[in-house]
Every structure is written in structure tokens, then in C-alpha cells.
Image 1 (cartoon, helix red, strand yellow):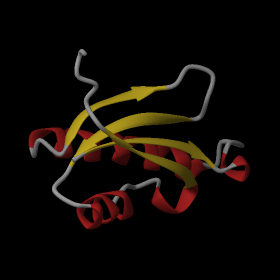
Image 2: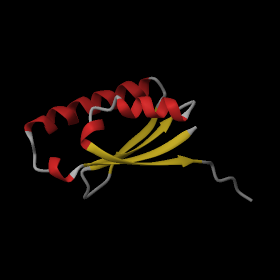
Image 3: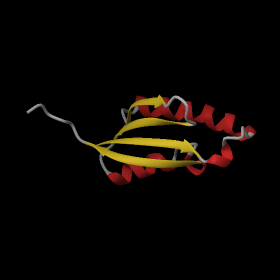
Length: 90
């Protein structure tokens, strides 16, 4: 199963709190770890926004929930989750 997860820092954290730099650094490490496990297909920064778009490859909704809960930004961001399905040519 593939999911597109778009996340953005909550407005109150966009002020540049010192913890945000640590969170972003830890987020990069977490993304690399998930890539190595083949749980993260790709991840992008969305220009002009404080967040990103990640495509997860998981076996269940529950696995996705666990991976999201482990994200260093989990308590500091808002999430939009979209299940993905391949579009086959007609």
C-alpha cells in the first residue's frame, strides 16, 4: 500500500524555536532509515511551505500510523494522508 503524506509545521513553530533545528536534523536521519527499510519511496520539500511530502510504502494502515508516530515532527506538525492507487492506461 502506498500513501502520500503531506505535513506542515504548526503555525506556532514556524517562529524558529531552537528545538526546530534539532527536529529537522532528526527528521533527515529518520527519512534515510525508512528509505533503507524500503518503507519510504521518496520525500520532497514543498517550496514555500514549512513541511514536506512523503510517499510511504507499507503493509497496512496500522504500520503507517506507527511510522508517522515515530516521525520527529509528529507532535509539531499537521498531516494530510492520501492512499494512492496506480492509474493503469485504458
